[in-house]
Image (tube, rainbow, N blue to C red; front, side, top):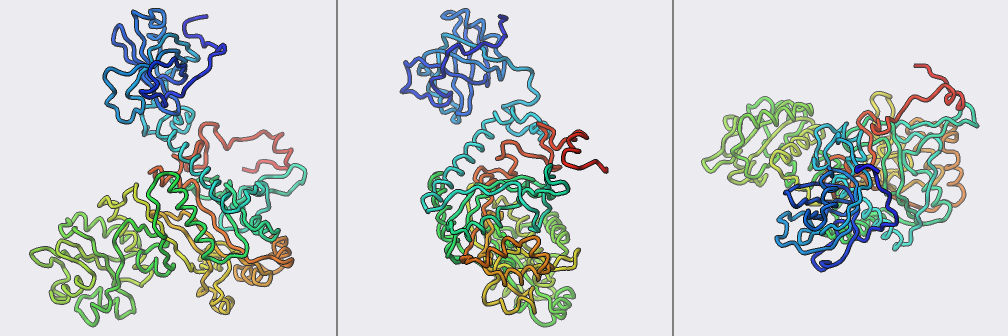
Length: 596
């Protein structure tokens, strides 16, 4: 056998993971197995940091004590897979690397087994953020060895286990729902799977287990949850994948507050288990209030800036055309207070104006409340007294900046919401280790699809309207609010849910609103409508994005960093090359042929 030929284990058993040894283990004989993370040759001594998923331990090869083992160690290179047998010893000088949990000890190696050598690496394990993400995904089996990725996958495991433990403690059953199912209109395109034994027919991969979990409630199972795999054929970005995982739950004989309370209990339990600060009671605001105050239905509460309406403070004719015309046409004037930013530069002002213009806002106007007085192009129109009154009413103090703009009310809030977030990023206000939750409730039931010239469900068509708005379902559907709710965390929609429709007649009415006739509804959802006729209980539920939750807790901006084998923005899994072209024979088996 050559020096670099792989060796079998031959009954050798690992006694410890590389990252678990500590000072009290000194004197023990151990067997460690892992990858060579780093090798340093000091002449008569070779130091190797041996790494596995738990961390790394320094292993020492001494030429005087074990010359043959030392000679073998001189052949080691990064990412060789090896086993060492040796004695744990306290280091004479502990490592100054605070990230190395084993810094107080080292292993004096007596035996070395090279289990597998490694070719020249296409990516470096020590490079946490390789510049070419495509290369990282192509060699994902190497990328996964990086300590950051290992930590993220371990965190995902802990979160998933904590979720299962919590729901089990609350009397839920974990129930799997089908992956091969029927195509239903749920807002995104389905992935279709042709059936070999049913020519011309297709399964769809589920966008969510929505219909099945409602059927489970009709079936009397009362409390269901699932770590559910979901599939949507949609355009991808950092927080989207064609296949993703959600924490799905449904409860019978409940109202909205029961679901919200259950989820808050999950959040508190999860944060306690992860030894993170447990959030206080999660605040609740309506969809309309979220848009009005923050310009978004998923506001980031880490940013202490609220959009304020100052139309009445300005009032009347000011001589400033933009404001006078806006007020005359029934538009509004709104603004933000940016603490401590009275010194903003003209270049920064122009940047924020460009952000506003990208959101269809004509312009922004600035008031700098400086110790020397007010500085603003609005002074000659509004006067110092009115400027001072506006600043006082908005809560602006000396050293603060006021930003104003005019436009139709909702458009204005949305545009200022984008400026608000841009300011927060520029001023480093988005602390990744701060967690701010928020419930957004009372969403619109429907939105208008301009391209298709029809109503569509804002959440999904199985959401119940608020009872108080039910009488306007046909006469004024866009004014109807849904018994829907979203859980927002740090500006991301973490969860979405609703009280469900459980009555056949109401479900048929809602489906008709989005353009489905009774016949079409029977074709697509006949099994659900039929089930509602057999004693369906009131029920409600929610789904939390597991990928997004773990990414936020891990401090990552992309969910790809918390998924073991993600796809790129073109939906390609670069390691295997999927999706791939299949043979004509395979196509014939499912009664298809290419027509490209």
